[in-house]
Amino acid sequence: MTKQELIDQIKLKKSFLCIGLDTDLTKIPKHLLASEDPVFEFNKAIIEATKDYCVSYKINTAFYEAEGISGWQSMDKTLALIPENILTIADAKRGDIGNTSNMYAKAFFEKMNFDAITLAPYMGNDSLAPFFEYKNKWGIVLALTSNAGSADYEQQMVGNEFLYERVISNTCKLASDEQLMFVVGATKPQDFVTIRKHAPNHFLLVPGVGAQGGSLAEVVKYGKTNDIGLLINASRSVIYVSNGLDFAEAAQAEAKKLSLEMSAYL
View 1 (cartoon, rainbow, N blue to C red):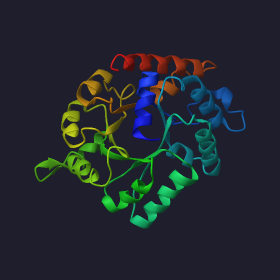
View 2: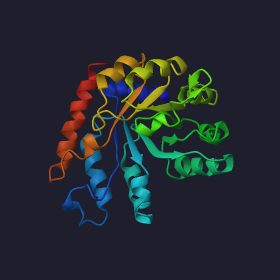
View 3: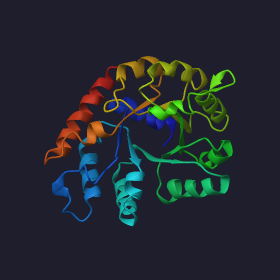
View 4: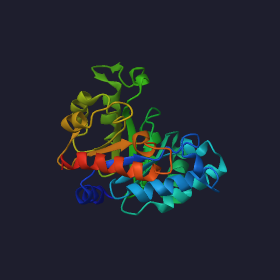
């Protein structure tokens, strides 16, 4: 998916919502556990209920890898179900020496055909470069994350700047805003001002709104560009609103609510 295609979807749906499919067998409704593939059945219902209100789905691969082969099969079936006009993100946080990253890129972009993948940048630009060789695919680099541990490395000073600033400025040398996004946590909204100095036109994938306490209004205030430039991720706050028979309807209502809030900024 190209940047313009993503922007067009945001304008069409009046939403910049990304829904995280962090599907946990211990949290999905009990009545689904009797089905042949409970994870897929849950995802299928969530996607059917919410696809009109979001522009992206983010699949956290850890929740699928934890189930072994069956988990990978559930992920593959889920990915095939997502409409082509919705951006698909593999939240896999890959990044390794060049030949290994080549294989990761092949796995997620060729074999599974994701549109985007999250990347860990701390082995350097040569560990990221293979992902940007794919046309119309995205690398989403961890910059300033919403967890407390971000203070351990990302917010440490390197010379006269924070390490996350160095990551952003260096990574921008690898790819343009047509292929490169950054992960920036919603719990640190005023830092978006600094981030926009380094990445003024890049899309930012923003977790932390909702369950982690981040504010949509503040994220938009400090991070919005002329093209919005934001994908607000909501996972638990949407998909686990209810664990009863009405789980899909409840998720739909929450996605619709978030979408309506976002439409005010478009």
